[in-house]
Length: 130
Image (cartoon, rainbow, N blue to C red):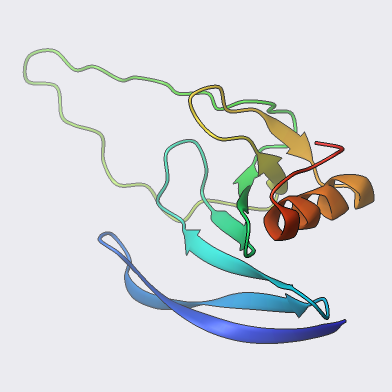
């Protein structure tokens, strides 16, 4: 097994162009890449995809007690001012979790077995434990 780091250039409208770290794990006969996707996402301030030859798995940055996305809607009436811009988000309480695909998104903790299963899914196209 060999691990190498890389840098990806991302562009998000609100942030402009920036660089984010990536990671490649060479497993001998196959490899997987952790590819940064972005920070301005619905339901999550960060996403990284684990990509292999046969599939991919999403990792999202969410609050620890969440097991699915929670969305809120704000409406304004009349001349009330629109929401003002907020400062930087404190990411201290957030943690990375594995996410299923839409429409029924669910989050699960990253543990040894779930990470092994995600790597198997990306390299073999199927998973036994997730």
